[in-house]
Image 1 (tube, rainbow, N blue to C red):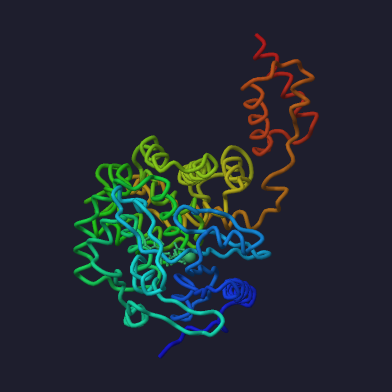
Image 2: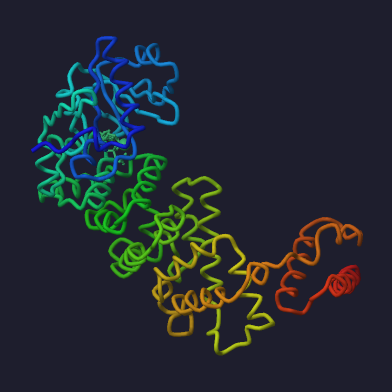
Length: 442
Ligand code: ATP
Ligand code: MG
């Protein structure tokens, strides 16, 4: 029974797909929806983006549509922009050899969807749907595999993984996301081909890891990567982290359990769990993360999450200290006032007390501290948590303190004193500043 029907596609996307197909039809080409959209229609999931394919070459597409982007023009991939919708439109291909395990050595175009199906990775990704007639093409038996709960490569698994080892990560991603079994022969081929992952560029690994970590059931994908021996080749620095990640059931188990409990599918949170030092050296965790070449902003976001978690872990139990004033109050308000608190809270709940096991016996109770702090916050107003600073850089300028690191330190110290309840008014703060400036001038 064919279940893929365009009427289940969100209207705007469906309209865009029809426009693309009609424009190509007028020029003598038949266009098909392919890949993830058809797959999602078959299993009744919401379609969020559309990839299409036809025999039209990139130059023809450029001429036919007003607004195109040549993202992978040399490999036959163009983006057609129609208002708010972007459709990736590829030319039917019959890929050549993949000598470097990355890009096809030469692109060979083909004329039919049946030929194009042969170069696609998995049978469930090689189904075609005509947006104008609803005709469904399934040359490799993708629908039966998908509905039967198995993930199968198009053609010989070893050959397909050897051509492009990124398909191994895609195997882990789709198996987890679609809850599909990987047949034994494909598992064996994946294990045998895993070393080829070391040829894949860090950029491609990070792009795929991003899709893995931002999808539900990401812990299953990471688990499969571990089981099939991919981690030490795709993420070798992670494998070495915290003494042999690879083979260290305890380390992978803790990470997977935290990934499973994570509420959000936020990338920095996922990376923070995957590369967490788990009580080991922060520096090794940092360099493992940086080996993936994340953007500066992304790396900073992950590191700040670790900083917040470490501060949270260090808090004493609420009932053992005075949180109405003093350093225990300031430490709490600083955590709550940071923009990453909601994510850190999520991470604390997901990690519970397994972030740094050895600390758990010495009072580092991340789960408990996260809960207690959230409860503490619920009784505070935004102004209580992050009051407007009593002092600003203008006040420092007036004192003729030379700008430099001392400025930042002084402002931070005055803010902490304010959070501790030691400085309540601007007058008190200015007097405090004068004393401090006088002592630093000595
Ligand atoms: P998603 O929902 O994550 O976008 P998708 O199946 O659409 O899933 P894409 O990465 O957008 O995945 O790729 C679109 C299609 O291109 C795939 O369905 C597959 O047919 C083909 N494809 C993508 N990458 C590869 C690859 N490395 N090898 C073979 N075919 C690929
Ligand atoms: Mg897609």
